[in-house]
Image (cartoon, rainbow, N blue to C red):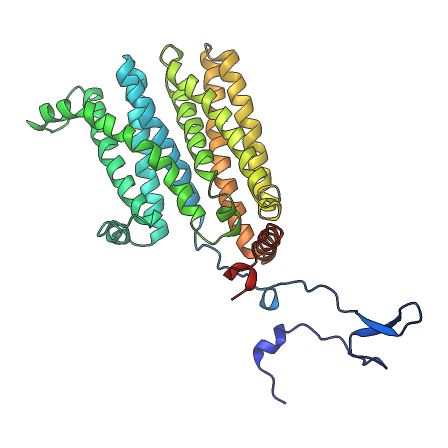
Length: 363
């Protein structure tokens, strides 16, 4: 008989032998001499996928998306610090944060477009606004944030150049709108930091989906770490008060949110967060976040110590984003991370007395 090429993937079948007396797969057992009854010899089924193939299709994203996740957090937090410098009379902090926000969102947009393949694909996402689509909502959030961050940063660049940009009569307009533009960017900073977490959680990727409730808190805290760290590296300590406070809050939020997220996730779905490349990155992320936070509290008045702490916080934020990203990709490649959490949820529903819905009946 001619075999198909796909039969090469079929696992070998063990030889079968029919037992004498009783049905196949059963054996006879005496019951106190009062006749007999058959007990099953077939083990509980272990559900797996077809020939061990992944159950869900891994997300077709590369490192460009992970870079965008990180830079989006840097831009969002920097816009908040820019507003803080604007409102508290810290011109150097305001300038550095605004420029940092523009640089981060621009580089992140380049990484995003590179992953999309063609720039016009991003423009196509702006043709409609769909509330139920994190990708659609995120595209509009990114565009609105970029407008405010761009205007306020250009005003800072014009001042740095001694008002030499070829703006002509637009300079007075720019000077009039730079304040409101800074406020507008800060308003969209929170959504920009969180929407990427919503986007990941909305996929069928097991680890991301299992973490969808707490992951936005992790990403917002990570954005605080990154932006505060950047400000502490680039800004003199006399003006980094708001950045240091944001750094401490970010460390607390990052560590607590990660622990709560892991505790509330299905234990199987949480395994990729502790294994392999992703596990190593997230472990070092926590260590660097704690070290950076401690350095901020103890040495925040010293320029060198503040810069070193800021660098640790920046690295911790990057490792958090890349670690969560890698853990999701790893969970999609192994069918175990899809099937076993489903079995656990099914058992929990049945134990709670829920037996008549489509999940428990399989219909």
